[in-house]
Amino acid sequence: MHGMRRILSVGTTAFVLGAGLLAGSSGAAQAAPSDCTGGANGFTDIPDSLSGQGVAGAGALVISNPHAVASWAMQAGNVGGRQMGWGVLSTGGAGDWGPGVRASVWMYVTNNNHASSITCGPFEVRSAGTRITTPAYPTSSSSSRAFQVCAILYSPAEATDAVCTPWW
Image (cartoon, rainbow, N blue to C red; front, side, top):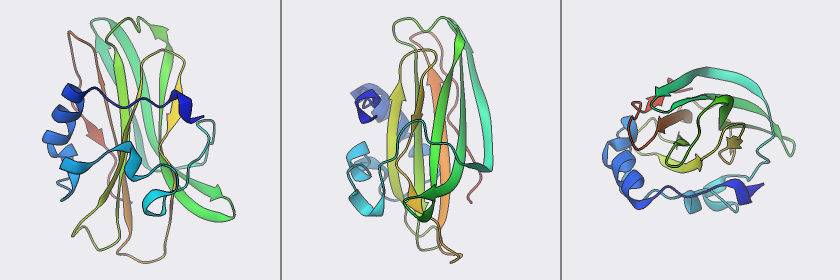
């Protein structure tokens, strides 16, 4: 399950995190998958095959050189008896996922009305027909807790802009 997760290259991580991940989180410069895997910071590892209810939005990313497609979404559902939220990214079976084509997904969680957030990821895929999830985080009826899922798709020749769901 987690053997499929790959950490972004140093250059990509610098690009994505340096751009502030579109959310302006206060701890983005130190973000790493280890911040949320293995039970870190209250997250729960889940299988990449886990599906839940779509919440807060989803989208598709497309590059033309070479042609590649990825879809991403925020989902919520029952994980070990608790309601949790997570991000998911799936790569289409069509297209040329040759060397250098990559897609990444990450999730932000805030517990204090956006004063700060935990960044979970980024997690990367490098081939068509692949699905990956972020670890899950418990939902709450408190308005101070919110989630946001973001994704990006790129190749050596072309990149999409990072896109994010609204906060949920």
